[in-house]
Amino acid sequence: MTLVNESVRSKYIGKKYCRFKKLGIKYVDYKRTDFLMRFLNEQGKMLPRRITGNSLKYQKKLASAVKCARQMALLPYVADNLK
Image (cartoon, rainbow, N blue to C red; front, side, top):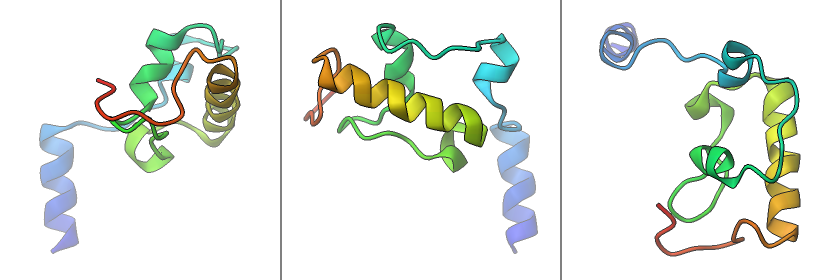
């Protein structure tokens, strides 16, 4: 049954990929809040790798950039309707 669900998911959604590798981004800048917002949900929580498709290396860089942006008050820690 999971095999059928995976094939249906890949048919409609497509294969997940690391956006950082595809776009050739080497450094995740904490000042680009519009880009960082793509990796947050409506409450302001970071989305996991299994949903975003990021590699481990860039997920760690993304997490540190989001934490730095939160500390600098560029991103909120908690929000009701962020998007």
